[in-house]
Each structure stands twice: as structure tokens, then as C-alpha cells.
Length: 430
Image 1 (cartoon, rainbow, N blue to C red):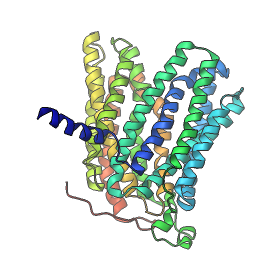
Image 2 (spheres, rainbow, N blue to C red):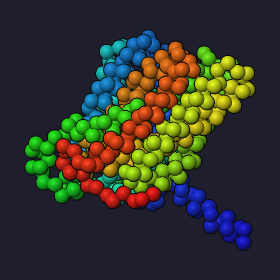
Image 3 (cartoon, rainbow, N blue to C red):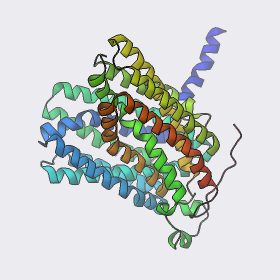
Image 4 (cartoon, one colour):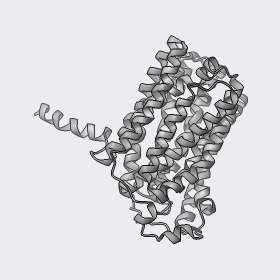
């Protein structure tokens, strides 16, 4: 009987980790295909640009900042293109464009070619993210979107972990050929992503699915930049996304500069975060089914993030192993807050967007990630390294304020805004 029960539970556990067969699984496979290449790219790109391309670190940082600034601006019109021309074809073309942009890094030598290639890469990546969200909206019902996005986030983390391992092999080799192989792998991964996306059924342009006349879309309805409630929600979400550079920059600097904890803890906390998201993001998103439950999830994430920041702050000035214990507890709280905030923001980003402009609105909402990645290092360095414990508490308070402000902003958005009417769903009482 126990063997039968275990056999019955195995498919259930698998179904929680793998999306259902059909378009959802194909979308996850596309996510996995390019995230492996991206993982290898992320861990090797800084040394490639400095050691192989021959750029100074400051110039690399400047070039990438310029590139992502351009990408964040272009993401909105590319999302609009996906709405008007169809998201599948747009996503395939942008995946191919990303592949070519990554491949161009193999031959650039010099600052100006590097900036041009980086701008092409950031533009294609930003547009691809928006087109994928529009494609998801066209293939998956509203009730299933947040759950699928949780699956995709888990898949992304799995792919990044595998890719980071491959990138680590290149770092260990330390040769130009190893770095070039990593970039070729990333370019190939986006070619594979484009091929996988072609397996999905064609999706009509958003205005056709929503039953909106073409003239209505073209003729005078204000765009997302005129939707002030949605802009406020995006801004608040951007504040909450300042936690993104914590693992890669804020916590490593804090451990090195302010605590007695061993430096290997940085890697351990990264593995803890990645593994937790892979295993629990889907479960964490299961209770988020509408605007009300999404708002509550975001609000809870602010409370948990404040607690996380307070625990991190306590790790200064204590013995090494006490610091290790406190930093581990803080990291657990941080990843719980991350998963709650992610689930809530995914739901809100779709629920508050007009049905005929999902790509455009997702392109705008996605700029929050770019802004957080661009400004986050400056903010976190000033707060955590410069101010120490008060900086942690200020960061936690800022997160809490943004999470609680999300409720009034969502009520403003659902009450009706200056854009075309949104397709509203009844909010279940959770």
C-alpha cells in the first residue's frame, strides 16, 4: 500500500514542478532553452568584456547602463508591435535578434562597437520579454497565468543554475576560447528558443482577440504612459524590485565589509535562493488568483522584507558563526518575500492591463526590472555599505511603504482610468 501511495504521489509532485502538457510546457521549454545560455553569460560577461574585449571596468559599466536605458525605452513600442502584429511571430523574431546581438559580442573590439552591440542586445531582450508575456496572455486563461509564471520562474532559475555551472568551467579555464564558447552557447540558446516558440500555435493580434476594432486601437486611445494608475503600480513595483541586486551585490558587500562571516557564505546564500524559488515558487503563487489576493501577497512581502532587513542588520558586530546563522535566516525571509512579491506583481501586471494592449503594458511594466538593476547597485551600496544598520532599516521601511501603497494604487486602477476599459474579472474572496 505504501508503494502504491508513493507511486501515486510522484506524478503529483512532478505536476507541481512541470507545467501541464501543451502550450504551457512549450513556453517553459523555451524559457529553459535560453536561460541556460544566459546563466553562462551572466557569470562570464564581466571578465570577457574586460579581459578579451579589452575594456576598462568603468567603461563596461557605462556601456551596459546606456544599453539597458535604451532597452527599457524601446520595450514599450516593441510590446505594442506584438499586440498589433501577433505575439508569436514577434517573439520569434526578437529571439533571433537576441541571438545575433550576442553573437556580435564575439567580434566587437572597442568601446563604441561594444555599446552598439549591448544596445541591440538590451533592446531585443526587453522586447522579447514583452512579446512573451503577450504570447502567454493569448494562449493561457487569466486564471492560469500566475501559476504558469511561477512555473516559468522556477524553470528560469533551473536553467540559470545549469548555465552558471557551465560558465564556471569557462572561468576555471580562463582562456579566450573558453569565453568565446560561452557566448556562442548563449547565441545558440536563443536560436533554440526561437525554434521552440515556433512550435506554439499562432496567436491573433490582441485587438482582434479582444474584439476591438483596428481603428479604435490606432485612433486616439492614449497609450500606457497616459495610464497614471498603472504607472503608479509600476513605480511601486520598481521600488520593491530593489531587492534584485541584493544577492549579487548588496549582501556580498555587506558580508565582506561589515560582518565576520566567511566569504563562502555568498555562494551558499545564492544556492539557497535559487533552490527555494525552484521548489516553492509555484506553491507560493497558488493562492494568488485576482487583484485582491495579489495585493495581499505584495503587502505580506513588504512585512517579510522588513523583517529580513532587520535580521541582516543584526549580523554586524557578532561572532562569525552567529553572523552565518543570522544571514541565513535573513536570506530565508528574503526569498519568501521575493516569491510573494513576484506572484502578486505578475497577477497585477496582467489584471490591470487592457486586454487589447497586453504586450505594450508588459513592456512598460518590465522597465521596472531594468530600472532596479540600473539604480539598485547605487542605492544598495549607499545604504548598506555607507550607512550600515540604519541603511538596512531604511531599505526595509521603504519596501514596507511601497507594499502598503500598492493597495490604494490598485483600487485606483480598478476603479477606471483614462485608457480603454480593462477586462475585469470578479475577485474571489480569499
